[in-house]
Length: 191
Image (cartoon, rainbow, N blue to C red; front, side):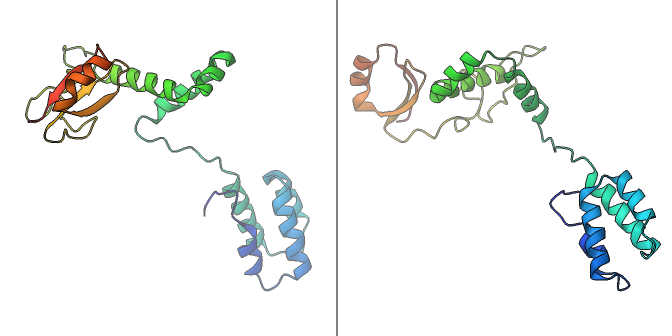
């Protein structure tokens, strides 16, 4: 039996019993939905015309409907719960500021997440998986080229702007882009 609070657990039990009148069904259904399991037990003991198997089924259904629902935690879910708990500790003014600038916060969180993924571990290795071809990606890790960004089209260069954004620029426009952003980094050139 499902433990969902949105399912009418009593109705199938009550409608399946032919010896109950509609008034009995109504009274039992109201008691089932308005009382806790202990109160329901006391109420059912005082009902003489109700078969014992119906009482037992109602009590079992009541206990099943009261079972706490455990949240399913997938891979990394515990980390998500700890993040939510820590959000409650943050100064409300800072949360308001973060809410007012969602793109900036998203970029900061993304940068922090990438930094966590490439931290050296105990053996000096990074936690990022190595690419099959051994080529380096823009971040300097050994991830495959398609891990964080789309493949560079032919005749284009992958550049990182000073704001951290990645862009594909045609070879002919590289000099113009460097004039606009003096800190522009060319990460990959596709012939």
